[in-house]
Length: 148
View (cartoon, rainbow, N blue to C red):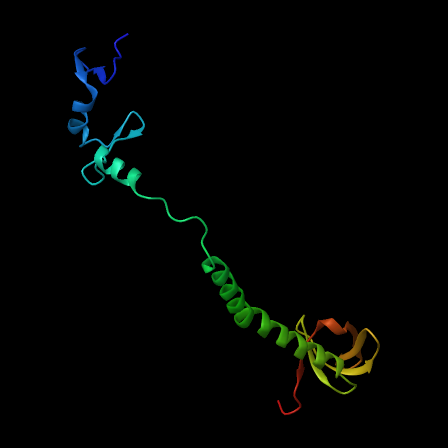
């Protein structure tokens, strides 16, 4: 077996030290599917590894910092996203409850019309002459002001 610890055979069949071959391969970073370290990404020295290994471990537990972070994150989401959406939803529900005969509306489908009859869960909307459509209350998008 020609593989010995730290040795390999070159193209001519001569045994060479594997680690002495690394500097000559710097111009070809990809060899046989493995990424070799180049000048831009040098091979770390063993001294730096032992220095990093001897550093003390960080203290266990993060304290209150992660808890405070998540509380602030939730508070920010509440004030930026959830609270305004709930406010708009309440305004929409109040507008739908206040609809009465004679109001002009726009449905979520884009129909413009005037309410001719109000039922429990739906509205009868006059779209044009002799055309009336029953629309569910939840499909009312906006109430059109008479001024416009």
